[in-house]
Picture 1 (cartoon, one colour):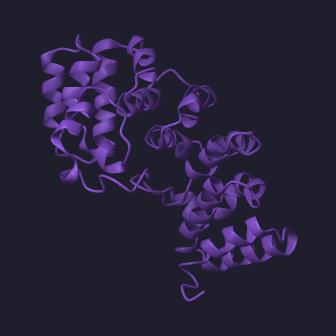
Picture 2 (picture 1 turned 30 degrees about the vertical axis):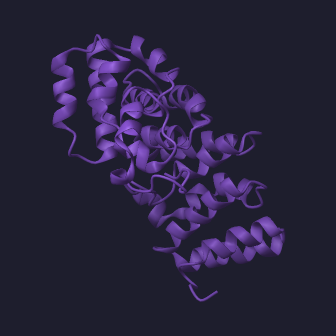
Length: 258
């Protein structure tokens, strides 16, 4: 997850008054601000009817990792308030609240994969960097569990006019990813994702280029020869500056001196 790195790089550097604003529902401007939010305080503000016992459960999870806390918060909200809370969260100014909406979609038990991707699509397009990251993290377990179907569905996203949605298509199924479980099949057989990777090999958006390069850098940890061969083919077939940039970054761990 990335944001404006020019301010508030560490949680401890954030002024108390800014923490209070975040806990009252203000949108975070940096990753540090995202991590500084007190979930129990924010939830009590956003959903005052949630109940003290629910907030106590949220407080008890405060020492766990951020990804797990997001999932716990979504589960608590879903159990106490049901799906009716989803719309309120999805429209809230707080990026953390909108992130909880992502994880409610991820936890929903009555959605097949196409419906789940349709539901998460607005979050994948969200203006806030954090919500866009939560969107793919929230549904990644389902993508991993139905990988062939996921690749087929996400390949359609690669033609979307929005660079945010094109980036989601690759970022959501990175073999290793960030803050998430690895996808073992893609570590062993990265070629499975080619229907998503190939259409993006010369994408004009740096946002997408970086995701494809990171995808291949992940794959290179287990299959360096495959990544080298793919990049060689792409450069021969495409020859654009965009492809060259992707491949240079993709090979940075294999050839760190270049």
